[in-house]
Length: 368
Image (cartoon, rainbow, N blue to C red; front, side):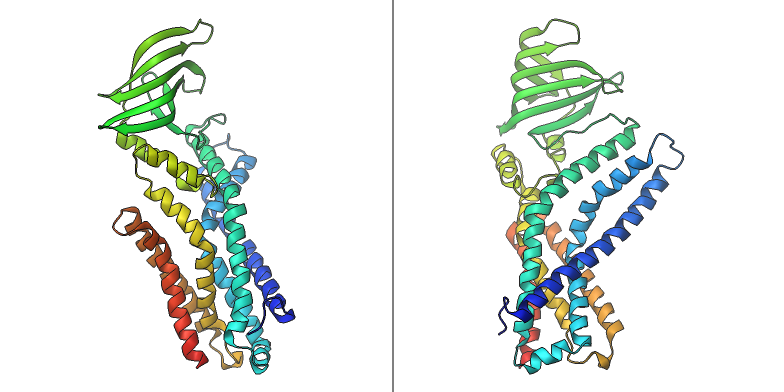
């Protein structure tokens, strides 16, 4: 078997990396073009929306889409690389030198694993920050207020509309569900008007959510230009409930790989389901292995001893069809996992294991 650090192994490793970035740049450009067309359609006739805002929105939205298509990017770039070495007869020469099919695949698999690890550990935190920025820009777009803001993933944040155009933003540093009663600590309630100007801020040490009210203890109420009001207890009417709190939890995509474990512990200790967050965390761990499985699939369609046999068009069609099938199947399995019909680990690992197992079986059959 060819060593990955040999001259030929290094060549295949570098070619895999370069082809990945070429395909990534092309697909990213296409995604940004379609996103720009869509946002221009949505904002047509709105003179207050600047070109700079649109460009910022499109760039912030890009990582969210790229995260979903990264397996396709790896598959396409691998197919191109395999097709090139087959077309130039490099593959024939490598095989004639006594190198097995695994000797060709190992450097490529290592390169793709490196890409996956880099994507999870370095690019994912950047993607999470841009996802949060995209949500803020979308909120500003919907409210027609360039200064409106959304909040980050620190603790629990919920926004609620009140009467007379007042918006209430409720933050809790911690929460716990005991005997169907939700306990919140380190409470901060900010009331703002339609122009996001602060009208009142309420802070409390602890609160319980019962019968449509937040029953606050050790309360400080602050109003602009007035002395702080201190109360032992205060009942704050609200329409939020336990289910709404669940629904308003932060999207897993807005949390970086490094912060997900703490977030999972925070919500799990509060008595809420953390299936979506565990799915997200484990899917990021599995990503490098899923990308390696996509390389194995790409090799089945594009590694041929002689490209003069033709079939390039069919190679592309079958490759794309296989990619879509894998994506659709993984989404179905993921849905089962999110709804707790199957274990989270199985929902995350199953696509990569099944794809790799089938591909390896085919390679072993061909090698024999």
